[in-house]
Length: 276
Image (tube, rainbow, N blue to C red; front, side):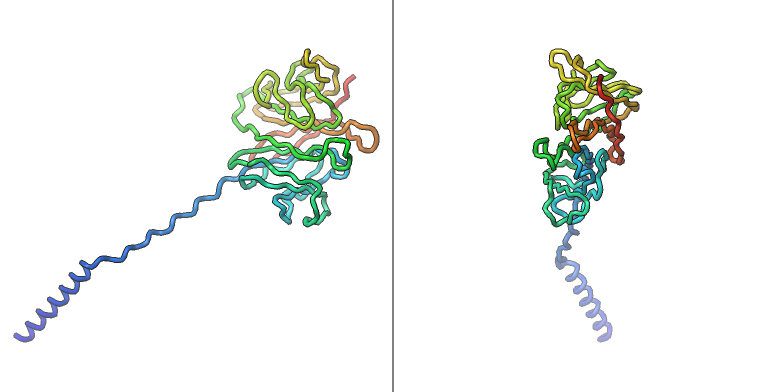
């Protein structure tokens, strides 16, 4: 009888202990920390070297005073990119190859506020060695990457030809595309808002005429270049060179640079045939 009582007591005590454990509140479990948000998508940037500066035919580009160039060698008439760049404003330093990265950069410039996922073209133009000419700097514009209507080509024009004056850019001699284009700027399209002109693909002659405000594309022919435009392609045309006497002169040419982000694409340089 005593043994049964002992067993009963043990069972009772064990049951009471389990009940006490079951009824006692549990310590709260901390939730796992939230996952870190993904970094914002980079902006895509292409740089075109359109400066005929004889002492900077090749440059190295640095950003934010870094010690390693983001573009080790960019040659006159060429493009680099599209390069992924963190969003925001960045400082750009340009040096000629061989200059220590700690040396003062001859050129410093701040980018626009680059937006995540957007695409930009930056063009270097002007001179360093000649203080009488336009000084070396950069221009920028966001690229239009929307779909192009089949059977059309999209064009932009940037005037970086030093000494070239104000020009009308005409297709096949007399059709206005960009009117009164001035040095150092993307030209306004003729007849439509913005900087892009749509035209038919295929062979076309781009003619530069002295600006004639009362008669678009009716001025004296300055020069021309033949182009083969590709269906569905967006292209920026960059007039570059320097019209001058002496060793600083650089023959005028047009850089044909397709907009192909995110894939890098090179520019094709086409000499300008002088007008008669």
